[in-house]
Length: 167
Image 1: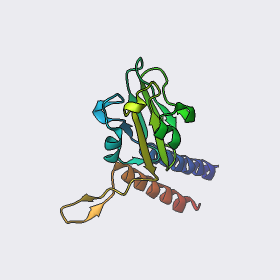
Image 2 (image 1 turned 30 degrees about the vertical axis):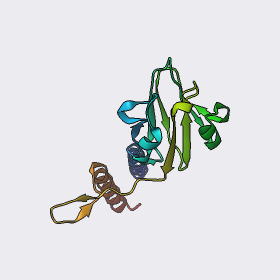
Image 3 (image 1 turned 45 degrees about the horizontal axis):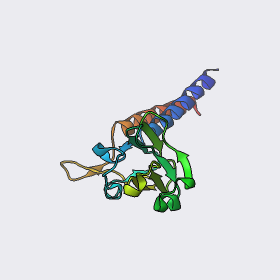
Image 4 (image 1 turned 90 degrees about the horizontal axis):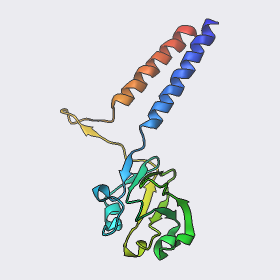
C-alpha cells in the first residue's frame, strides 16, 4: 500500500513538472508592436525583425468597427482574397489572439478593403527558439533558470524515492 501511494506521488510530480515546463514556452507577440493592427504600417518590415516559434501567440489589437483579421493561404495573402480563408481570427472584441501551433508559414489579412493598402502579414514559424546563453564572470555559459532548478529538485526527489523504495 505504501509503495503504491509513493508511486502515485512520483507520477503526479512527473506530470506536474511536464505541465509546468510546457506552460512557459509560448509568448505573446503583438502584431505591429506598439502600432497594433491598422493601416499605414509595413507589416512585412515589422515581421522581418521578429522571430516566431511554435507555441507563441499572435495578438491582434484593432478597432473592431473598422478592421478584422483572418488567416488565409498564400494565394489569399498575395491576392488579398478572403475566399481563401482558413480561420477567422476576429471574435468581435478587437483584442484577439491566435496560437501558432505548427512550424509553417501563416498568412493574415484584413478583409474590409485595407489589405490592398498593406494590412496583411506573413509569419514564418519555426519549431523552437535557439537556446539562450547568458555569460557569467568566469566566461562560462549556462541555460539554467528557475524552471530548470525546479525540475532538477523534483528529479532528485524522484530519484531518492525510487532508490529508497526500490522502484
